[in-house]
Image (cartoon, rainbow, N blue to C red; front, side, top):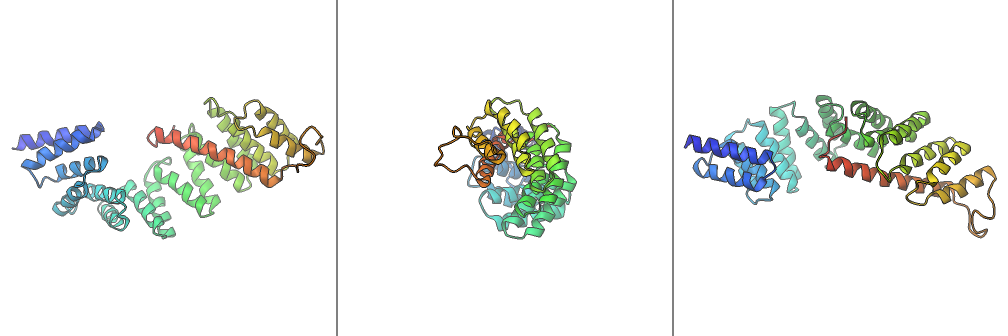
Length: 305
């Protein structure tokens, strides 16, 4: 029977690594028919079962933790399965047990950070994410989460410091540089913001993306009331603008420099306000952020670097 169980483990593990979850679950169940208390097979069945939404996935993982209460991996995978089902309180308990058994499990710490934040325990959540980021490389999911958390709490200096760590670790990652650029702008570090948008313009060679970093540069120049540099950038953006924003920007800037004429707009229509221009540019960069985030997701969440 031993060789049969070993073979089932090998096949289930191999199929799981190859993302053939149905085959992995089938192989694990085959092994469990001969060895129902085999912890590794139970974990494999649970992990594959989560992927195919099997009704007994959590049951398999619970059984694994009952049989091997000191198995950190079993608790970790149980936490992920419970979180997938929306059972966040139970998931948090499982992740806590995983971290007790393996304090260096940065992914479990990251999960704990998110569950604590979801429960409204801000300081605890950020603390867990910071622990995870310290254990992992600078461009880890925990580090990325910290940027978003600090930003959501209005801790822009902390968010910027973390964003710099990620960009330094993954210097080719466009979303990391967009974080640096926008947070530098938000904290009044205008030269840093302009340099980061320049870097982003160099990095992003995707057709159709050309105007987005330029819109960021325009934001920087508007922030320091550099009307002439902003006008030069608007001229550059006009030929590559996918949203037709240049007309609004031209009218606004001509109004600032006293160059507005009858050909800019209908005399009865007021010139766009600074708030309207800021909203237009912010919307453009929000679209850009979504594109870059989708691209990172397609790469499995990995950063370029």
